[in-house]
Image 1: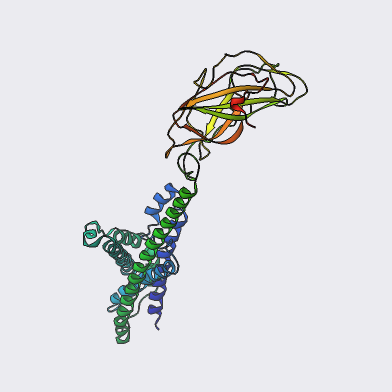
Image 2: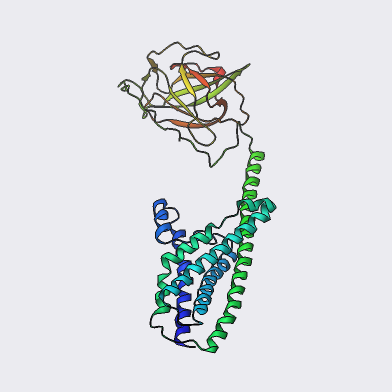
Length: 386
């Protein structure tokens, strides 16, 4: 093997490595938009993330054969030039540009085959040569590196054996390109099948969850977007020193009641200290849906069909005693709706809310009425939580 042939082999190998390295760089920084835009100009790559995410072994085979195809075409074109004289810098650079365009064109061909396989002949209307153009640009930007390797110190004349060597390399390059197309087509098919299977599994899991779900409203969606329910409501009202503190009393969800077309739920405050304390005003009430997000419910103060509001007034809660407030609302259709799956309550806004799991037909956009705190001296049998 002459020194010129060795230089051509090294240049071809360098071109194949640069091709793969460019694609790898794009894949690594794919999540950085500005970096990706800069790379398209400075380090173009027809593959980008293509091939890298395919299922094994097609990803490896397609990548290896793509790099080998670039190297083979570079070597063949330089060998063709070398029939007359050693390839100079410009000729070797041109060989890299040609290799990028040819392999890019074959990638376009793989895409066309995939579209035809999916949509038939009408898919040809969407065919393009985008990868061929990017491949040629890749050779223009990076081709000087293999060109420098191939042309450095090249002064040999060309003899008969080299011409024979160049002829059979065309057959090798063609075989590599055909193998690349076969692997690429199989890889695209495997990737499409894997995506379809993953979607089928996700659909099956969603269906299974829907069949098992026995609660109100729509099936919980882990991917749903929303605002988490706040555990402390903002307030500008200062706390009265006489009010029950969190160290003395706690608010919690009590029992519920129903009438035709109407619903009710009690909120209780237990004074678990050994001294009386006071509550005044209205409890802080909020709701969370089945996805754990704040439910859009309008909370109004006042009477409802289920309870009469006596208005805000100081209420002394004896040690071990209870205060009570009542929530009322009209029944709602829950089919496919976001519904109240948790009730969050506090003695007043600004206190830490306590959450309780519920299944209520309070839906997004509905309105509830809440009464002021009053003494629950004997217990309200309608809303007994025992």
